[in-house]
Amino acid sequence: MQGVLLYCRSRIRKGTEIMAITALMASEQLGVSVDTIRRWDKKGLIKSTRDSRKYRIFDLEEIRRLRNKLHSTAPANNFKILRSKAKTQFTAIELFAGAGGTALGFENAGLNHLLLNELDRDCVGTLGENLKNAHILPGDVRVADFTPYRGKADIVQAGFPCQAFSYAGKKLGFEETRGTLFFEFARCIRETRPKIAVGENVRGLLNHDNGKTLRTMLSVFDELGYGVRHSVLRAQYLDVPQKRERLIMIAVRKDLTMPFLFPKERDYTVSLREALKDCPPSEGQKYPKKKHDILKRIPEGGYWKDLPAELQREYMGASFFHTGGRTGMARRLSWDEPSLTLTCAPAQKQTERCHPAETRPLTVREYARIQTFPDAWNFSGSQTSQYRQIGNAVPVNLAYHIGRCLIAMLEGASADGTMVDATHGNTATGALF
Image (cartoon, rainbow, N blue to C red; front, top):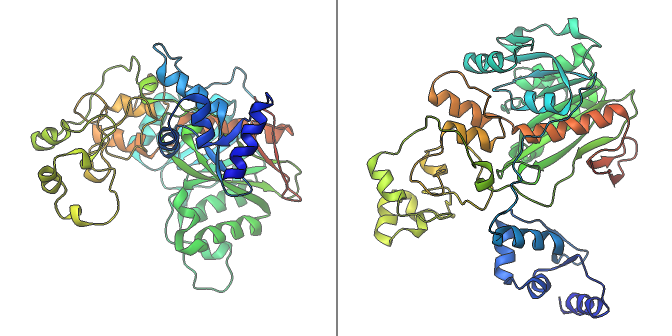
């Protein structure tokens, strides 16, 4: 560590500013404490990387922008729903379309949907109300026939539910995924033969069943004739005011030559304050009196450990004696940070999402803002169903960035992402939009 500090200081004395430096050096340069920088890193407000010596280093300019933003009396509002000015001719089919987060993001990026499939009746209502010209196929994907679309779709996308896989056989492959909804995604790929297939799921899929589940999926892509790469995308660095991670798999048909592109993370985040500015009023859940009385004692950004000791035990019950931080319990969000990951209900005890200033759960419209749905996007069904639809959705802006990379892949150009050479697996940074 001392060598790193001496090197940085010598460069600064020579008038050359180091952009990637340690937390200690950044604190000396900017007048911010080391603990503050580390806290910002832990909260996902800035990004750190590891250098060749495994030291955690930071981008000085990024920290400077965050400091100025937090101390400014009139900070610029970075919240926006991203939309490309031009449409392309590229087409997509989406399975498990839900409330339309991915569909809208792809449409905003410039893609055109040939078909959206969804089973849930309320989600079908949401899609129909908002995507007036979309061809929506309601019902069970397992009885859908995709053969009429063979050769017509450039992209097939699916945010498939992650069900348990069977490993009874010795060979991991297409046949061993039967009975799972991933199989229906694979069947759609086999029947339509798109240029690109995109799978989306939770980060936990990486380690599900000691990695066997993911290996099975990669084997299926290979058996279908597709090369595949995967990456975990962090939504808070991709214009989404929410700390949410999604595993994205991109598969390219082996007879095609194109790069693999994933979105390049931005060096800024969008705060809850920015996202909820002028948010229109809407319905929302309410706390029972007992929970309300507890949560009104929690400061902004705090959680159950900010309660007096006697109330901690009363509220937590048996969980008080469990190991782990349980930081989602009695949690109040912070104005100046992205939201925690939204769940299907805003008032669950294990994953509390209390408004930063008011003692209440987030409303339906606030939920939608955080997932970067436009205010005009209406959700069908009961209040409970609306929360569930929004909580399960892929953030619209995250889908937009993925869509822009897919378009760049199809156009044969570099994009705002990390390019992986399809033949050799070498990586190179693509150009910024």
